[in-house]
Length: 470
Image 1 (cartoon, helix red, strand yellow):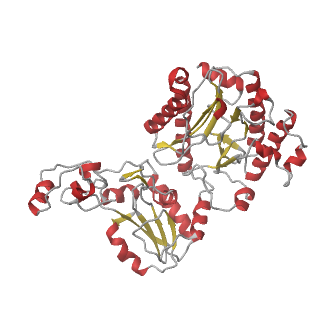
Image 2 (cartoon, rainbow, N blue to C red; image 1 turned 90 degrees about the horizontal axis):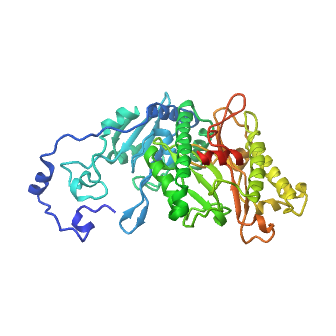
Image 3 (cartoon, rainbow, N blue to C red; image 1 turned 60 degrees about the horizontal axis):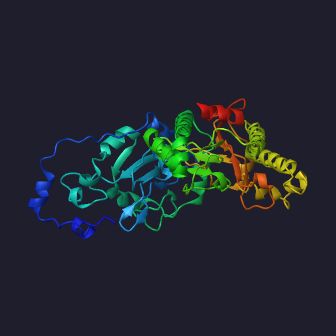
């Protein structure tokens, strides 16, 4: 992707001279540039605590974690780079092509971060490499600035190979694929699981980052509500999607995952990320969205509200049933409770609602049995997940531990039951077809129960109608 000379990379560009005189001309006459690191306060210290935690788990072992590279979008263009979450948790660094090496010592581990050096004046890549050259992408932080900001030893990526000479082939490896690492260093499931487990309980700094992300997300929902007239007039789902994503980019790093805006018959589709349909006055709008903070911690909130500002009787019935399941499931979140307690309660309440609505033709007990599960036709997804640097955080710890390990203060998870009645589902009464409702909140487990981080957004039908009126 990054050839030596721009003349080979882009046939539309006039080839440039490659002699020393031209290089000297391109290298001279430049003043100082801002090379500071834009880092959230406390990020370097938080990463240091995380390294200490994982180092204790792997005493005497080499640990190697990489940030990864941008994925190719098509031809010679790339998607915006987003570093591997495990790498960020251990470093708070968001640089592309970076590698963390934790070398075991008698006292624990020495951590060194290997980073690509900036391609500034004096380097041919400065003007010849459209992916790295500062003439193309702007000034980059120096290694010294990274070291000061992150409170870690930082060295050039070119020194990595020599550093790995002493590392055994069974070093524990994690992170995104990195060509600087040879085939000896394959990803270690043991390390991946340990990193996931390390994120089960957030420290105070991480909780603050999640609060920041949730607060920005709540504000983003308000911004979307303010654009409903435009969406009804001409913009549709795309207008609302773009409104939230503009807000996320302005008040955070961007979105934490693909925004879901499903209006009318699109609302029952769990992952309606196409967002290319109209918004009509009679539609419910299911909005599932989250702002990713500058530290890369993300929120994940869902509300379902009427485009007209008022629920129809049928829409209100479905919403009320989901709200009851949501409240019951949230009541199961607290220290000593398990993820399974929350999930089982949500499923049972949804099955009960389906039975009351005359949709479920078997008993609730039969539906909840391992050989039943008929309610899953109308709620095929899970009912929540851990939340952090990844929208589905802690995902590698294994189903048994995920479901059965008691929740501890500092855990952050979502609760998100729903009912999804597709427009062509003939098992559903006609008046309910095409209605999809999901309610999702972000909860912090506390010493005495839980705190709903996203409580600023109402969850009742009446509350949502008042919220839309402003």
